[in-house]
Length: 274
Image: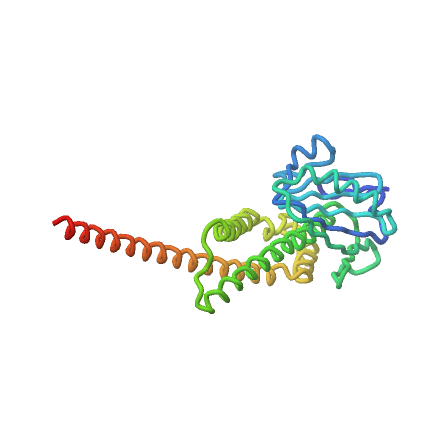
């Protein structure tokens, strides 16, 4: 018999008590949830908080910040699930380099709800609990993408500061513009993805969900990792501002030299003209 949540949504048979595999896959800056629901079917949550798509062997949760969490029974053929994820990718916006993570889900009414390394145990597979687990896992997965980009940008910063430490000026032109544009673009994306930090409304109505939510956040170290990413982006911002300032100073110095040369030429022409 299917379990129903407070909102009346039924849980697929495959998510009845037992062990399940969860795979989170980050694909882009977001998903066209409305477009995906029209093509793939499924249930679009109020406020477009997520799209739940049920298949024979898997349940997919698509989140607006670009990650999809797929839940299957342990032992499900991975190639079948992979094909479904590839179908979902066409609804991703501003495609990113793919990032995937795995986590185990155990549904057991007799066990205490807890979050351990690599596994979460819940008593029932009602939708509210599944969404809470899936969204926390998806947030961690999306954050991993931004961690990777932040590392790439800070590595580029190191190259620039090492160059300046040797007494060399930072590069100009398209290479520098690309670096500045990428760093600013990432900061904009991160600001627009503040839902990564937003707690779901359900936790305010159910104390057990609130406890589970904070256990998941602590396990995935969401807050700590977010602070590290923000710190790295601040470092990138400061480096970009310094480089822009140096380039402006260099251009100003060059213009001063040009003006002096032009004045000197004018004086020489005046002297020889008389």
